[in-house]
Length: 412
Image (cartoon, rainbow, N blue to C red):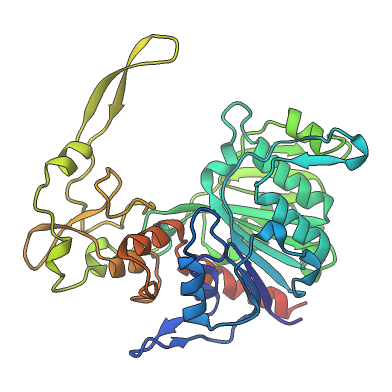
């Protein structure tokens, strides 16, 4: 079986960078190992006229008809090339569904929710394997019906014939420079040898020993707070019932097999992290240094602010103090799209050469996500470069996953 990949919501190519150990040479030329063949990629940003992420993708991987800059909802899914693995990082949205006005039309999801585009592609193309990434709050959303959104996803995948493994991975616990926690979701179709090889396995064994994540990220074999439930058609007649009634406390690891769900808390056997101090540049431009630190000192300090809620009741909003400047002997905190702005979440470091406080540079932001230096230096503004890294994943995580995934595909 060929190791072909379709990359959705590709951004600046994080999955591809990780899968193919991508580097830039001294002339800015992309050096890509032929581990996986990326046959199609889609990146479209609806809220802006400039398509900086797509232009970066084209700059780094070449101008190609297989690089799509179109609203994925308008793409004819049957024209997407056949592929072995579908990958993508998609937004956490409200996945609730309802019956359409005309019941003959079936089930409707909310317009604009990108999960339904993924679901449609899976329905049309049925790739053997899926690897998706999302924020870890997906497991607990929405707040009024915990676990419903992830339950809707799992039922969709179960209906399409996929088994699923998931794991919340903190990149800093496996040797990287950022405390970025993300859920990775791996699906495999019942037509695969991999599915059949796990069919008779115990679900807890898939989590701890035989699954993709257990073979990629070392964990303690002790499972904590195990919980199980069912989401099959005998339990919930259709997606409407799941959307209306499913509620479940998902843990950081789990598996879905033939409608049976097992979830548990797993503990990582951690590897030494890369510290923020290790990735800092030398001789940084003066523009990154902070002249007036008063706003940062206030934003990152302890606060207890009186506020009034919608019912007119007074309460205090509290925020704990943060390290200022950021500790250089620890990994970076989770980077957000607001990085470099005057914001509580922005990293401020003490420059080792001048001992003055400054912002991190765009290159340092790229290093925090394990991208090659100057990956986003493709003509976009510096502000956009930070934004891209706030939206990106730590490329080393799919890099680790891809090694065992390649073995799985080769065994097909």
